[in-house]
Length: 439
Image (cartoon, rainbow, N blue to C red; front, side, top):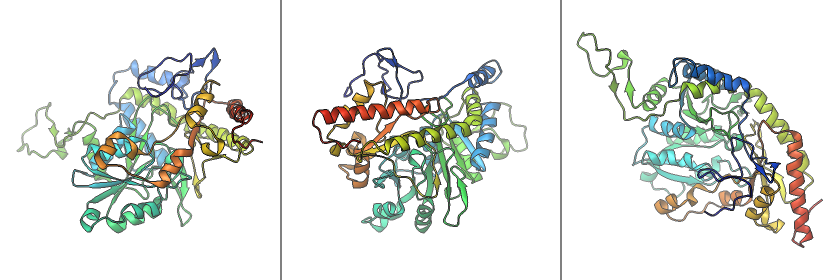
C-alpha cells in the first residue's frame, strides 16, 4: 500500500477512500465530501424495484427501452448497451477486427481502459502526447505520434481513439481528416462527456455520441459519471453492420435470428433451441436491473448537467482570487462541456508543497480530491511492453492536475467550503514560510 488512509474511514480493497463512495462517509463525525458521487432518489429506487418484481432481470424490455431513449438523447442511429465502460471500449475495438498485427493511437492521458481495450485484442499501442493545459489529444499530437514510423509501421495503424476528457471535446473534426487521409477508423471515448455539444467549423451543432465524425463512440455509466446505472456502458454508431457485430460480440457471439444464420436449414423447420455462435464473443450484456436505473437517470440528465454547471461556475469565481498558481482547466472553444468533475491545474512546485500532502491536508478537512490520470504508458504493464516513454505535454498536465469535488448532490455552500479549505492550507503554508502567493 502506498497511500495513507484518513482517520475514520473504512478501507475498501478496490477503492481509494478519498472519492467515489456510494455513501457519504465521515471523518471525526463531520460530513466528508467525496470527489465524485452518484445521485440516487426515490424515483430511481422505485424503477429498479419495479423490475425486480417483474419477469425479466437480465436482458429484457428495459434494455431495449434504455437503448431507444439513449439513442434519442445522443442522436445516434444505433446503441449497443453493455456491462461497463471498459466492455464498451473492448467491444468497439473487437468490432473493427483489431488484432496482433495492428496499431492503435490513444492519448497518453486517459483511464487505462482506453489503451487496454486495444491491448485485449493483441494490438500495439501508440501513446500520443496531449495538450498540457487541457489533457486533450490534438491533431498536431496525432501527426507527431506517427513521425518516424516506417511505411510498414504506418500501414499497420488501423484506428485512433481520441478521448473527450473531463467532458470537453477534442479536435475531432481535424482528427477525422487525418484518419481519412490514412484510412484509419475513429472511435471516440466519450465516457466523460455525455450531454456535451460542440460546433463544427461550419457552425453546425453536434451532440457527443452522434458519431458525426466517428465510426463509434463509447460511454460509461459508473457512479463517478454524470449519470449512473450502477455499472454499465454503451457504444453508439450509425453503421448497421458495426451495430450487428457489436450485438453479437456482447452476447457470446450468438446469433438467434434465423435470417442471419450461416448454416442452411434445407427447408426444414429449425429446432426451437437452435442458435449459431458466429464470433468469439463475451458476456458483456447489460441487465434490465441496470437499464431500469438508467432510464430513470436519463430523465434527470438535463438537471444533473445544469447543477454541475452552476457548481463549476461557483468554483471558477471563487478560485479566481485564491492564488496565481491555481487555475481552472483551460476551456475548449466551440464546446459546451459537461462537468464530470472539477479539474484544476495547480503549480505545486511554485506553491512549495507536495501534491500528496496537499490532498491529505484536504482529506483531514473532510474534502476528497483525486488525480486523473497518471500517463497510461507509465504503468508497469506498458513499461514492460514498450520500455520507458516520455510525453512532455502529458507529464506537464499530470504534474498539475487535481480534481476537486463535483457532483449533483452538492450545493454551492459545499463549493465555498472546499475553496475555504484550500485557502486555509495556503495560509498554513505561508505561516510556515513556504513560497506561496495568496490573496
